[in-house]
Image (cartoon, rainbow, N blue to C red; front, side, top):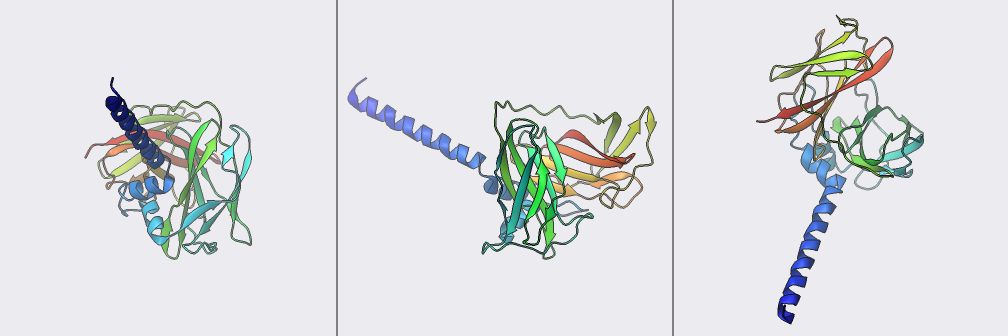
Length: 271
């Protein structure tokens, strides 16, 4: 290879490396992913909302004051604040589903999920105990209402160690959790869940967060987020007829026998 060809090859290699770096930067930038992705996940309808896009336009950010790198399996203390476009700590929050702050923590492969309720101190900061069970990159969504609008700013958290992402299970209409059998019926407009235990349908579900249950919908890849409230019926049902095409993980939570249980489903939306 002559000198000119070597120079041309080296230049092409630099361009390729730069392109890969740009792609990696986009993949690791939560603000880019959450603002762009969540804005197309679900329209505000029947309690569903794509809150991350709204929070970006409102200028609210999540600032973590405690370490963001945790030891897998070890209990830690997470402290964070919500700040406005001027950097001032937001102190006023409205009650949404019986709480002023919901913290959703999910590993980026959508195989680990937690729903926590931090407490606020006199300075406006929020805190909660948190254990990241396995190594990997997690994303924390602060889900709240302030100034009459819903917001979901987020931040990445890290659990050190060797990590191999897990593929999502194939779509299925049944899931098991804590000995319960949970069945999903999708009529194209509503997702209806029924809960069984010991071969018997349970009709005595207890209220959870002031409702029949709770549903968080996350899209694989960009983590587009929708927090869906149940419809006002005697069944565990949610309106999700505005989901954009994609592969989703559904985390449905219900309360029975004094405990909260979480069942996870994979759902594919084609059109």
